[in-house]
Image 1: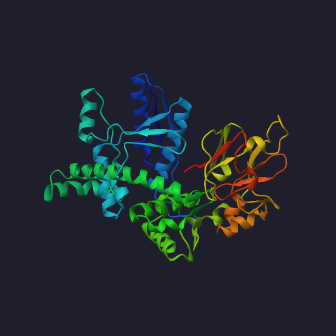
Image 2 (image 1 turned 180 degrees about the vertical axis):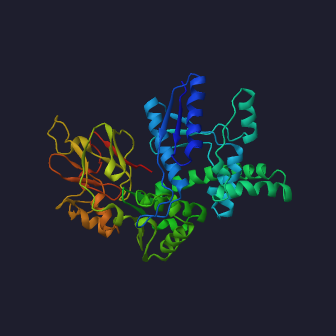
Image 3 (image 1 turned 90 degrees about the vertical axis):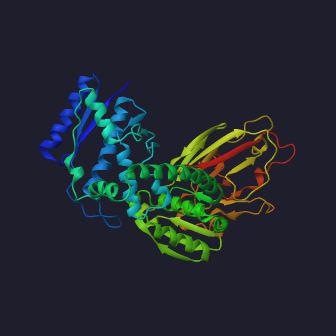
Length: 433
């Protein structure tokens, strides 16, 4: 089943009214359900404190995607198709070249992506020119409408659109094809590097909702991967504070790289983001924007999983008959001797929760002979900032409150798997990104 959606931005008067009527009429002609929305976009809006100034086009695009996501939910759709063409791709790549984009940016408009809501966006016409699409429509009795504001020299895309014919005449008659080929090559390379950077991220990053801690071993990685990890940390910390990714620049990534390599210092970056470096690594956080975190507590089903939204983690619990893992202080996967802890012979093991730290919490870390330490002190000694300590997830007994695991940092000695330990439980904490 197919449905259509169209947003009237309230910006172009009678011309936009006619566009909306055209979309509704064409949908009716093909017996498609159609949802038409009306939005209002201010002509210009000054940026709020800490955010960048936004053009009406940026605001309209944001409003359009919000409306389309809502329409998709109403229709029960899991995929949305947009009509970006090969000409749009060429214009996008040229714009990014002129603005000095990084290699990832040269990949242009992706053929498919998944929005934060889980809605999949596909662009099936990226391989077709605008002229070919319009000819296809005319052959079927559909006369496409044009938005005249797309041609205006007031906007960067309109100026690039006017520039392309001159480039074709004076430099390369196939310049649009050359730009699309550049996008394809850059996008393919970026896919590979993104996969490698994701694997590196999982190895060196300890992320949570408000901060990311990067291990100093990141210094030794190839710059192409290292900078992608730094950019990811910066974007994660800026989420909810900067109005868009445009607030984050290559200069901010270079500052993070310098802090990482010097092992000391601090800097305030886009969107209230704070970066602090010491010998134990680099922390990127957003304390200004987020404010004090609220405490949380979730039951851990055994076996099963629970999404810990405030900490941006999913904690999974599964019975494990595999060979015991070597004890590791900073792992996001641990094994615990669950069947022999705190239960009478033949009785049920204690229930578990994942929660934030509480006043008075202590843990007896592996290898310390049962001696306990305050959980906040263990975190502080590891270099975790105060904002991180307040929102870091702990796995604890629900009945006694005893802390068994500070996720990604320390496991309790009482949970060590030894011969004859009985049932073994594997706990895994996976960050949302």
